[in-house]
Length: 187
Image 1 (cartoon, rainbow, N blue to C red):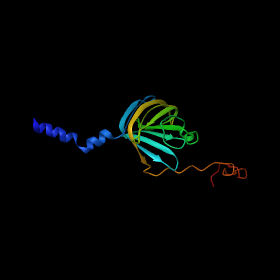
Image 2: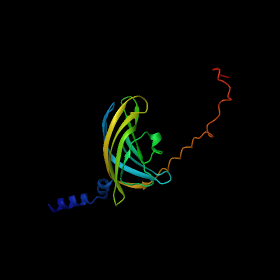
Image 3: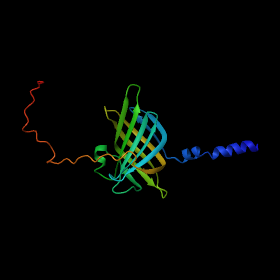
Image 4: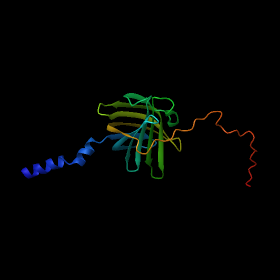
């Protein structure tokens, strides 16, 4: 009996099990044109240069990503889900993405409405929940995604921040009024 108790205590002290229990997790499910769920370890990376936070979880070939665009710092708040092309300009905002494999193709969805509710803790970990409508990037399919994330630690951006897109102004749009019309023939 004492030997069995010792083994169980040793197993309970295994640092890998302790790290897995403490690691942040994201659980989400979706329904609509496609349905499924994910429960996986989650990571959060902060891009200080661009002021955005990316939370993501990958399980096999399925992945969920949430990008939060706070006004100036990560704070507990409700972040409205908007189309990714607008998220950087209507702060606070969030964008949500889902990638999955169907029997015949890789499918991607991106959120266009909903909310991500973020709760920060004194220890620097994040928790929250999400609910979003997401549209397929390749057709008119849509899904509703809902889920939660817990105990996700924030790390500095590991892969480097994405470059800021160039600003489009009247001065940077090419003038095509002097271009010769295309006659449709190949030279």
